[in-house]
Amino acid sequence: MNYLWAFTVGGAICVAGQLLIDLTKLTPARILVIFVVSGVVLSAVGIWDKVVDFAGAGATVPIIGFGHTLAKGVEEAVAQDGFTGIFTGGLTACSCGVCASLIAGFIAAVFTRSKSQS
Amino acid sequence: MYIKYKRPVAITQWASVVGKKESCGPLSGKFDEECADDYFGQTTWEKAETELQTRCIGHLLHKKGIDRKDVEFITGGDLCNQITSTAYTMRAVGAPFMGLYNACSTMAEGMIAAACMVDGGYASNAVALASSHFCTAERQFRTPLDYGGKRTPTAQWTVTGCGCVMFERFGKGPFITAAQLGRVVDLGVKDANNMGAAMAPAATETLKRFLYASGTECRDYDAIYTGDLGRVGSELFFQLLQNEKINIENHTDCGCVIFDKSQNVQSGASGCGCGASVLAADILPRFESGDYRNILFIATGALMSPATTMQGESIPCIAHLVNIKNKEEAHKK
Amino acid sequence: MRTNKKQYDRMVKNTSPRSRVLRNCVWAFLVGGSFCLTGEVLINAYRAAAFTLGDARLLASVTLVAISAVLTAVGWYGRLAKRAGAGTLVPITGFANAVVSPAIEFRSEGLITGVACKMFIIAGPVIVYGTLSSVVYGVILFVKGRYGL
Image (tube, each protein chain N blue to C red):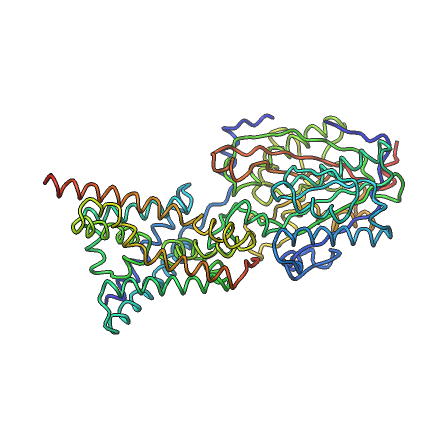
């Protein structure tokens, strides 16, 4: 059952993104920023935790989940370390995804070259 | 500015080279070379575009049977920043060179300049060249090639191609007899993914002024070609001309003929190489076969940069027009 | 010219074809949903391998990033994205694609001035504004905790 919810909720979030692309003048970069910031806000007000509970990866894999990770990170860090947690929380929590992308980017750049399209 | 050449200037040879996608299109087989490798055997896209131009000039010189040292004047450009692709090509060619940038209208602009050199008696031969490469344009104006993005329905596909023509005082033709140097026109289009719409007013303005100055009508020509308005731009061009009370029935857009609809190019093709390669591969040969006696070629260019687009500026555009005739028409009093 | 900017704006709007919203949304739903489903499968697989839920989620993300990097490197991600639109943009695979594609593209300008400088040219805004909003949230949490507001 959780597979179905992951698929449906994740797909629905992408549809929301597609509607923003097709029906507004927002560029993809702006849409991603809107999504990640809304991820932080939705987590801060406690909504996204509930979505994650029943949709699992459907709520964490879309870029809103990136915002959720940042918000969770800062919550934990502020609770544990106080003031310095404000600075360390977000980046520490998202470091895994960012670092993985960075490594992947570097390896890909070393071993492949850009390809023409058709 | 309306230019009536003192004497018709002969177009004595031409050549075109294109990339893979173009070679799969409706004009396949008409180009001098169709390269299946968009890298053209090079290591970077910029080098590839230089190689594309070098091969195109090579075909021109070979067909003409002359050496590169015999070229007295050459002009042209491309879409790369500081038109480096052309500059690097010219480093090897070694002929007196005038670099031009008017985005996709560069071919017509170069033809006007080269024909002036010959007509004025400053050079006994002159070459005009223009190229574009999908990959250099994409990485400069849009996003990295491997970045996943959906193209909007109004977007146009930059042609990987190069075209060049040689002018001389005498020849069997076709001939360039008149030209209209365009003015920058901007009707406020800001969408860099709808360049046809941005450029259509410039084409309208240039055609209108040319018809007025030359005292002719659209129906006097066998065909009126625009460079790369695409399907959306062509439709708008038609509407704008109607608003000017100009009726046009013989219009063809190079951006609509080089690819067919099944090639997933949205509104059509664009790029300096679009008009240039179609001119050399499809339009000029039709003078030899007798299909055409008198045509207009209007190349349009969108003069924005990634910086001005991000700064929210609208897109200034320009169109240059050349009138090409066969021997009989050109020497008619 | 007889057509003014206002009239022309209307002409452009009427003439330019619109996006095929329904078809785009179906593609976005199916492809986006599939990435999320893959994520869920991965999370369960890592949990079955005795990782905690938190670690399993992180590892699932890393795996998806790796999958996206491979698809990008062989040129399939871009091809899929031509149809899938937001379905390839919004999942974390889109983030990875946004990092990997400029890295590959700017390899020709060198490993430092090309790859490293341009790597976050597209994904950078997500990190910048995500981090900034987390800092704002952190300040709110801190002030709340300290002064009991």
